[in-house]
Image (cartoon, rainbow, N blue to C red; front, side):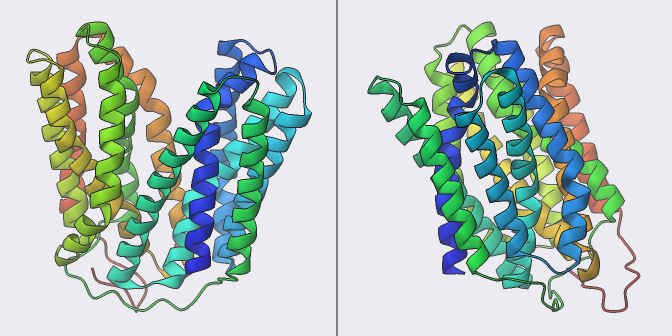
Length: 381
């Protein structure tokens, strides 16, 4: 497990250096337009989603750490293409490779954790991994910002370091040699929702990430005329809170059924959306206060969602279930920017009202629709 955690740290630091400057690299080094770079990145993410069914089948054949390593090696290839290529073709190819690796990683990672830990220990391990990755991404982004602020043409150097980080992380992951193991029964309480209900309900839940990264910056800067420092402060505060409280809160949730925790996250997120609605008239400080409520809802959601999908699935179908859950999350995240910004442009009340109703309805669906497991050794939560 220690080598795998080390792989997560190295990967997240490398990813943190890459993400903030990927578009900038395409524009300043490869000579692309901003719109052209954005289309290439979106296309790469969609290609990544299209590859997920193949990843699920590979996982269901017993592979675990090898799949994680493959997602990292594919990203190495993507960065190498960036460094060696020229123009839009190179950026589009690199975006596709990075999209495949990035979209495949969550399901592959969850499958590794499911093989290493069982029951509520698995939930805690997933939470710890999220905290580690958030810390690594933040550290990588900070290092990259310091390097760029120092002046000079450092983007090629950052890309080379990122490729090396992905390569090392892939080697560490592969060396763990984790394969499928027979899953023990969970000993929680309650009954999980059906996967069909969970996948549909997850769509409005997954939109929550765009609230922090897209909607609130637009609301604060364009409608409330607040300083651009506020969106940055919200993002930093959210990251710090997730790093500090993700693991303790998930351990505390061990007293709850996973379905109940997932539904509770929808209620908390819904309350934060109503708070943002009211907070617009109260000022940026009020938005920041309700941002803490939002972060709690995000922690509850990320701390219970993947764990719920794993626990509600027979071990032989784990790969397919994880990629379906990732597809649901990816689709929700892909639809969110356009849908939420469109509603914001019409009327903030319409945005927050629709988002609140959709999230609360999804929470009710998860809490009210039990599943009857077909396998004899069905795990109760």
